[in-house]
Image (cartoon, rainbow, N blue to C red):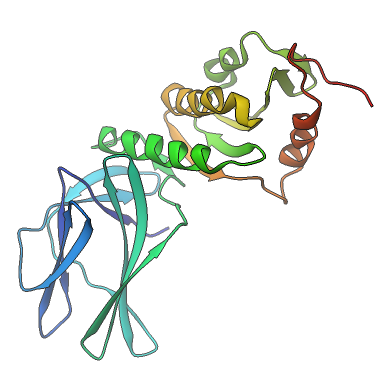
Length: 239
């Protein structure tokens, strides 16, 4: 897995080595700004399963189909966004993506605290967009005891814990790895958001993190069934 590059309010610039001329990307009030020329490069490199480390060296973009490109993330205020800078024939374009893969293989080492806010921003933005309900899947680097208390006050049915507006699936995959999946009604969006933050806090990092319902995941499909049946008392209704 390749490293991800991030600019934040503290680490706000990265320089690209395009061969015949340098390019500087700086985080401003309205997002990333691009200018030709050198700059004092200061960014974060998120290395999967290693940690988060400051970087200052100019970055070389990848090349494909006569174009050069670099993917990076910008984190500021309450936002997090992924961008792709493309250079083709010395013409530049900046494309924004809504995909967030930054926390796949995320390890709490180095300057990881700088990105805990980014995770919170991501969860908050996703939760604010939920219409019929929210869903998330996290693979946490933690043992079962570290996350078992997160379902406090919920009833249990097998690996599913449920209460009013919220259903949680918790399964250990190894002695130090736990899968936590959750779905929530819109009325429980604050509790959903707090749960995901608590999983990150209780773990040493994340193997993966996805927002939204995963069709390929049996637990996600199963706990989805609890949403329309959750009553105010937290008990499944029967048709």
